[in-house]
Every structure is written in structure tokens, then in C-alpha cells.
Image (cartoon, rainbow, N blue to C red; front, side, top):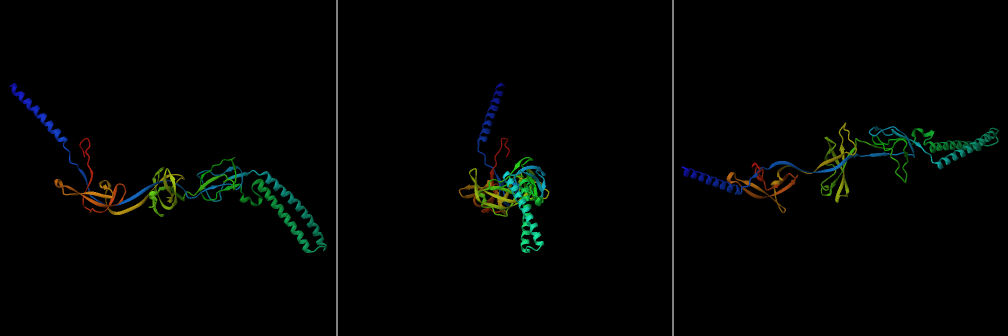
Length: 371
């Protein structure tokens, strides 16, 4: 009986050993590769590029004083709306001493000349009333008196302008009142009450009192690489997305492509500008970072397949067309002519018909044996 159990145990051990051997052998055999089956589809393929830039006003104006002096009052703040001619700030004039002295001397001289002209006129009028001088001589003396009065008035106005920055004759057009030159929104007021300001001249640009821009007339400004600029043309539509305003989608019309490149980090870039279509009621701010997506090429209603199914060999492209089914399945290597690619799908111009199936990427099993 014991011998019988020994034979059984030996048989079981041999069976386990043989089973393990067969299992390991089967596992070591190479598996047949499995591939995805892809059916070409009629689709639209577009090649796009994304341009990084920013949103800014088309016209941003720096308002500067017409005289030098000190800021005494500021009537507006950044963010407020102004109209052309509206007062932004007021400047107190600090007169130049040499100009002031010259103006005062002109007033004194004009006063002396006026007094002398008045005396001459009264004397001439007395003689004219007695008929001792001609009307022509009287008219000349009278004309001299009028000129002396006008010179006195002009000298006083000049003194007021040098001393106060404004004369009584042109108070409404005072240069001490800094007015906006356009209608729009104040982007910045870089001065404070008490700051000294200077007017613009041949030696300096002058002090900026305020920056004003029309925020309803915006442009997108960015740079595009030289490899893509040749496909752009004026009038092309662009989709604008702003990082700070994810829910806002804008469109723009390309209106300017720079004829000259600028080198940026070793690459040649061309500046572009596009007119942004600003939605009613939107509150866009100057300087927002934005991305512009523009379609460089577009192919509609073409036969397309995933680009991963293409085999490249030099300048030629090939695909594997599926023939038969089941155990009779085979793959026919076929040369095709490709067209536009968007990086995912590619256009097939010839070599493949709608309805034919092709071999796609290889199916790779994961660790759990799932495909």
C-alpha cells in the first residue's frame, strides 16, 4: 500500500514539473503583434499657429504741459473717462527772471511812450481846433497815440503771461490748465501735486502729465517666426484668448506684417498687428497678455487618417492596407501621397480609397495583460 502511494506522489510531481515546463515554454514563445484597425474619414484639417503678444490701445497719447511750472491741482484719476479739451491738472508758473525783467522793462517803456503820445496828441488837437495844422498832421498824431495804447496793452499781456502763465485777454485758453487732447480713458497720471514739470522743447521730451487712450480701439501686437510669416496675409482672421479672462473670446483682423525682422533669442521674428473686435460692455485693460490663433492652411472635405499610421521612408510615405479577415488577414504596404497635416491627422491625396481599412499603431499589452 505504501508503495502505491509513492507511485502516486511521483506521478503528481512529474505532472507538476511537466506542466511548469510547458507553461514556461508557451510564455517564452513570441506573441503575434496586434494592431489597431483604422478606417479613413472625410474630415477638415487645419494647420494653425499660436502667436504670443499683448493687447494695447491703437493710440496712446501722452499729455504734456505747454509751460514749465509746478502742479498745483489734479482733477482726474487713472481709470476715469475724459473728453477732448477736459481739464486734467493745473500748473502754477515759476517765471524766468530774465524774461520777467525784460517784460517789466517793456511795460515801463510802453508807459513812457504812451504818456508822450498823449501829450503830443493834446497839443496837436488844440492847434487843429484853431485851424493851425492840417487834418493830415492831426491824423498822424492820433494814429501814434492809438499805437502807443496798443503797445501798452500788449506789454501788459506779455508781462502777465511771463509772470502768471496767462493773460486777461486769453484766460479761457490758459496754458496753465492741462487739457486732454483726445477722448478716452486715463491710463496713468505719473505726477503728483507739487511736482515740477517742464514743457517739451528741442532738448527734452517734457514731463508727461497723463496717458490717455481710446480703449474701444485696441490692437493685438505680437511676433511670428520667419518660417511661418510667409503664409500670412493682411485681412486674415485671428482668435484671441486672454490669460486673465478665460471666458472671453475675441476675434481680430490682421492688418500689419512688418517688412523687417528683429532677432529675438537667436531667431528672426516679424512683428504683426491685428485690429481687435471689442465686444460692447467689455472692460479690457491695456497690456493684457494674449495668444492669437491663426489658421495658416485649411483643407476641407479631405480623406484623413492619423499621422501615426504613416510610415516615412526618405521623401516617400507608406501605409499598410488590411486585406482579408481573421486568419486570412494580411497587410499590403502601399505608397501614398500626403497633404496637409495638423500634427494629429494628415490628408491622403492619393493611394487610398474611402472604405479601405489600414493598419494603425501596435497594441501594447499592459502588466495586467489588458490591451
